[in-house]
Image: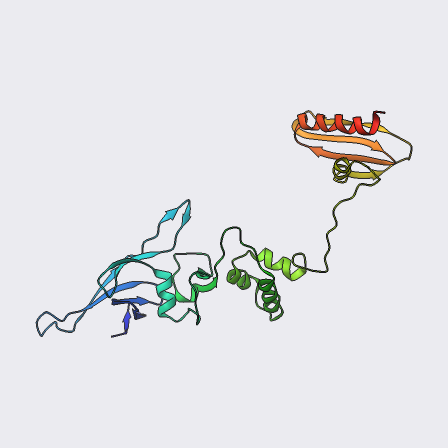
Amino acid sequence: MNKLIINDEECYRIKGFKKYHISESGRIYRTDIDTKRSWRTKGKVYINEINVQFRIQNGKLRHGYAPLTDDNGKPRSAPVATLVAITFGLLPKGFNKNRQEIDYKDGNKKNLHYTNLVVKKRRFANTKLTHKDVKQIKNLIKQGIPLRKIALVYGVSEMQIGRIKTGENWNKKRIIKAPEAPFHIEDGRIRKYIATFDRKKTTKGIKKEFTIKRNPKVPTDNQIIGILNGYKLSIKHTNITRAKQIVEKLNDYFFTK
């Protein structure tokens, strides 16, 4: 008996677990058929619901598991979302559990209804989108697929997909230049550091040694300020000790003959 109606839900026998049926909302029932009792009870289906267990690990809710006994009589802790996906035909042909995984559209791992499950590409820590991924994402965007659905499939944020759409990320035409110093400086390290300063044009010929402007109310609000070659240069620094060292080096380089 592959199909049963239990609690007004369609339930189907679980592949590899012939003693159990699973409903469209992920509820699991043990459905033993009596073959040993009297003729009055022989063939009767006995239904007993199995509790789905959820554990919290490292502050995060894990996938729901159910303690089942497989067709070989071995006890197993089976992932319920996977059982739902298999039973209701959600897994695509050629599904690879090492590269793909089942996720939840609403982000709620306790919502095991088959309409809430989606198969997406498995993402590992520190992995990044490949050029092939981005090409496929751009095609999906052109087809009008919602960004949220694309993000679920590729295991990235909707913001990341939005940046690909606008060309902020993964745009070959977009070239980001490194900041440059406003005037020529021979020392490479000094030149790179001055390039990070905010600059404002001022009267040429005026020079003023670098000093630190401090905010007495906020100890970490320090600003290095100096005037060189027609530019007023400034940069914020949170560490006053480090800021003093920088000011000393800059003044030695630019103002000490």
